[in-house]
Image (cartoon, rainbow, N blue to C red; front, side, top):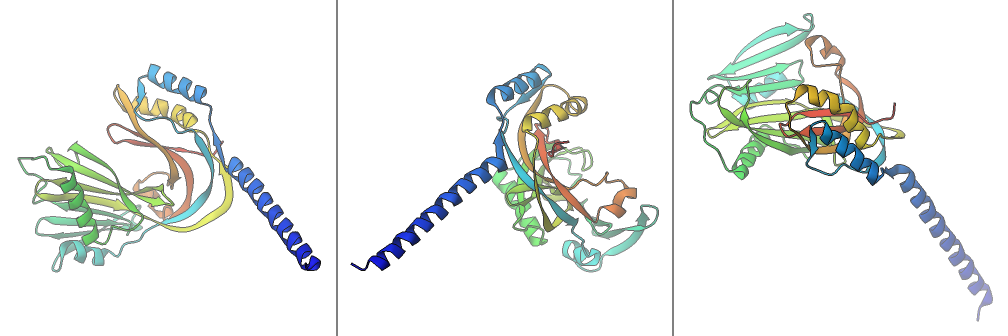
Length: 301
């Protein structure tokens, strides 16, 4: 037997075994540091406290508290004339208004009672006035509604890999008219987590697409530092008073999830200068039965 060769093989095997053990220890430590879990008893107490105040949960409270980084994002800029051709075709009428102390443009395109508004090159609003004031309204199969919404977004090149249908509602939307419509809520995602405040709203009745509104984000980079987030229980407690003030009881929470939220001060005209780009913070999103969503920043204060 070649003892020298055998000895070398044993040394290599020993080194590989130690590398394997060290890797698994570090990996386990990393995972324990990256994700913590809240106590089930405490979670139950919080749920009871919410119930006592008129807020019911239709889903279990998430228990995990992962460590997440911040993202740098910017709002997608649309070419107004290019989008007008896509939505309205050729030979449309165009007029321009200014807002935000006259520093930003609102471009309005019209053709055959259809309208596209492009605000600050960021927000698109489309309306088909030919069908939004229908005196009758018929319900549709949900699969049909989803196909109509998806096809419309694909046709206008707004359906991307990171855009997914999140919610569907049927009811009266005051901005659209006094007849019930389907509202399809599409959201962007980043690594399977929501990326707000970005959205596409598509409004549909039995005749077709009534309206659409969208603002989208573009991912730039991830900041390297990760921080632990607050538990979902704390986010619920923080949001409770606002939810109670803005909604009639009984209130049912339909969804609680963690993702990213880019929050300009507000969407008032004077703020539009400052919402080109910024930091999307890890946040909890709480959705109740009427579709309203509440965002709570998830980093510990």
